[in-house]
Every structure is written in C-alpha cells, then in structure tokens.
Image 1 (cartoon, rainbow, N blue to C red):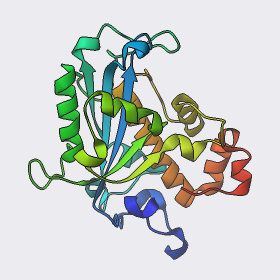
Image 2 (image 1 turned 120 degrees about the vertical axis):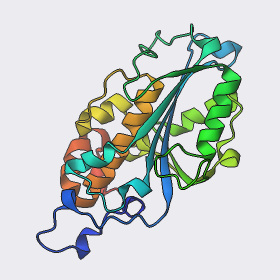
Image 3 (image 1 turned 180 degrees about the vertical axis):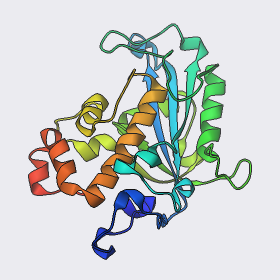
Image 4 (image 1 turned 90 degrees about the vertical axis):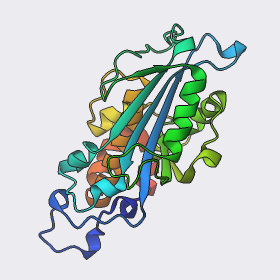
Length: 250
C-alpha cells in the first residue's frame, strides 16, 4: 500500500527525514483509488433492493507525484474528488429505522438526482473512466483500486443498479477499511474508525460523504502505518485488540 501512494520506505531515508514535507513521492503503479458507498432503503428489502444513494470518492495517484503529503497526509486528502448520486425513484425511501439518513447533506460537491437506470449508467462510466483533473484524455481508462468500509456488503448494490465492477472497470485490487481496523467478529462502524483516527465525519450515512471519509481514513492509516506505526496502534488499539498485539500490516 505505501508504494501505491508513492511513500518512501522509512528504512532508506536520512535521519532528518520529515515525511510531511517530502516531494520525492513516486507511486509505483498508475492507479486510481476509488471509494464507493451505497445507501438503500431498509423498508424495501423484502420487495427487492432499493438503492437510494451512491457515493464515489476518487484519489488519483498522479495527483500525488512530487506533492508533499502534509501532516498526517492532510494535503493529500485535499486531492480527493467526490460525486453523489440520488436515485430519483427511491428518493422518498430515506433510511431511518436503525440509522438516520442525510441525503441532502453532501459536503464535497453538488448532488446529482438521476433515474435509477441513469445512475447505474453513470456509475459504470465513472468506474471505467474515473473523473480526475489529471486525466490525459477525455474518457481515459485507468486501473482501479476499489475501496469501501464493509465493502463486501456493497457488491449486491452494484448488481441492483446493473453495474458489474469487475467487468465494467479495470479493478486491480480491493481494500476494505473495516478489515484494517477490526478484529475478527468485532466489526467497527465507519464512525468508530473516524473517531479513533481523529477524522471529522459530519453527516455520515450520506453515501457521498461516507465514500470520502472511507478514503480519507485509508490514506491516513497508510501514512501513519508507514511512519508512525506506534501512534496508529494506540489510535486503533480499542478496535484491533488483540490483533494489534499480534502485529498487523496495511
């Protein structure tokens, strides 16, 4: 993971090395990290999945070349771009029985209200051609690292929208942030992870916001694991224990 982001190996750096200000960042693969999140109606499960929102967050590793990460990678987090789709037909089915939904509180851009078929088509296109200011040509296809929190739960929502991520896109790898911060059956929510990492998470259960927060959490964890492993361990210890004592890798 550190090499995908272009982070230098700390064992090869000089004694006065400051990871926050390095400019020798050269990602080894030309990949795009794409975080995905879906919201769906709790009331409609028996009648079939009703996706209400789709969120995408994109971090193009080209945008990180020669760019200092900043303290705790905060400068890199500002490179994340996001999209938020609201499914028009299901707009009235806002989640709320178990958690409070917030579809109108997207903090990283402007929400797009589209029909379900159009949402699926746009999502498939975004996966094939990730929206990025560093694209070399319009509609450029890129290798994707698909990211999510409890990502395995999201696969059925792709299908509900008629999207086949492994056929529609060049998915090189997948990363589940829940797997990185939890021990066996003790599953941590995204809010738990954000709180432990000190990442502000306003209006979670908005698909666009949660996609961004998942990607922010991943980048911060990788940065800290590379250069401040003990500090990261203390942050995550309540979620990871006893896995932390056994050692873990990102």
